[in-house]
Length: 451
Ligand SMILES: Nc1ncnc2c1ncn2[C@@H]1O[C@H](COP(=O)(O)OP(=O)(O)OP(=O)(O)O)[C@@H](O)[C@H]1O
Ligand SMILES: [Mg+2]
Image 1 (cartoon, helix red, strand yellow):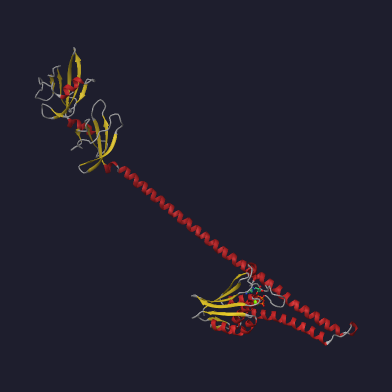
Image 2 (tube, rainbow, N blue to C red):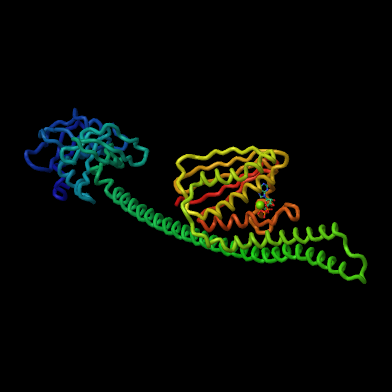
């Protein structure tokens, strides 16, 4: 045994009284020495299995070692065979099973005390796992370093093998995996961000295109509406001019007939005057329409000048003052200060204001109030013409700017006032808006850019 492994220091045989009767090992021979009081000798005698492995201790040679002892009954008496094992040699055997660099191994006893190996050694282990449980893995501190350690009981002995590895090394692969996972996550995240950004851009682009299409469609629709109103206008003009022409034709025919003696009496002076009056009235109606249309078509003829809006309003209201007071209409002026001049044709602007004021007057029956207001923002002058008249339905509001739309009695309105005003304001780079409430009144707002 001794010659087979350098870990075995010596081998001895002990008689029942505990005396070594045979010795094999390095000199001096320990044969003849009495071991009956040794702890391991007494343990092997009482051990049910008949064999023990002692803890590391100093023997007669004063050198640390542990023993493997086997007891056998021979002739009714117990004889013992013992081998001493050099813990360092044993340790080099245990430590030699080093699968990885930096991994250390040692053997500890039941109390966790180190028996072999591990250089300076981890010292006594604070707690030992239960023998029946699985191998235990825990973290420990030793000489300022952190380790991950595993304890596994050896079968047949009261010893356990402790393997420890520096913490950072133990978790190196975990760390690496974590790094790889983080990298993969970052890459995935990046990809997701790129995809999201690209799809958002695409979506925004599509929305913009949709907007553009909608805009174009609206333009087309507006043009179609314009075309329709040109058609309406033509029909309207024909109708509006046909009516007075029919009246004139009829009256003139009647007068001509009265000159023919075969058809009856000549008409009296009174009737003649009446018929001529009808002709004059019808002619005036036709002329009103053609005049308005002419103004409408010559909109761009007059050169624009710098106009003070407040002054213009004062003049127009002055001209209307008598008419309003007769109709029992009060006028309120709320003219803003520091309003920059606009660039516009005076006649056309007057025409717009007259149209709005006439409409307001017509909407008020039996007295009310017209408020004229001016204000400005950073680009436009806004003129409100507000009345306390009958107001309009939503349906009427949609049509007010269409040529020949009128709710007024035949002969009272041509329905051209607002469509002409709309054209004039548009041609000056401005806009005209309406808000109205049936029974409450109406406000028209003209917005014109500064000169
Ligand atoms: N201030 C208002 N209050 C209520 N309804 C209004 C007002 N202004 C205009 N309207 C309505 O809009 C219609 C069209 O007005 P617009 O000025 O174009 O023609 P009109 O006044 O009928 O005729 P014209 O102006 O040619 O004499 C009016 O007939 C009326 O129904
Ligand atoms: Mg009008």
